[in-house]
Image (tube, rainbow, N blue to C red; front, side):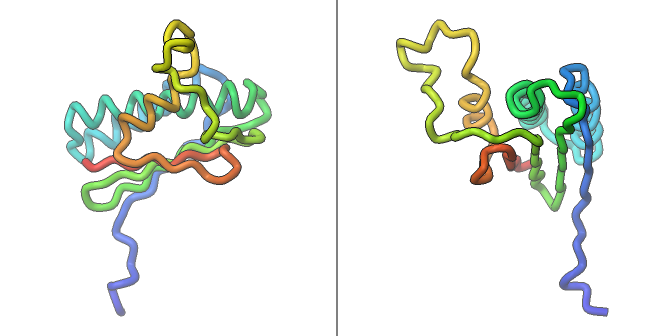
Length: 140
């Protein structure tokens, strides 16, 4: 059998109910993967921050805390990288028109920093066209 097309990575999937307490399930998965794959403390902290932000955004803004809607989280570990995807069932948003949280008129705002933080802490951050899915890449 030709081994060149065999996937050697590991795939993890979570379906989270759209309530903020669901974040604990995600945190447990992040810890499990980080322990198993010996992820550095810095990368672990960045993953925890980014994925918590992405999942909270999906639960609150995407699914509007609707208990009938789910947030799907996937982690694909291959070699020394992890690609996470966080998808909600909402209408999406235009990630290109977000206000800059570092500009003077926004600096005192209590919200609006999540996507900014994610883009700076992940090695790569890709939104789908609709804006209801984010893909986050981390080298481990």
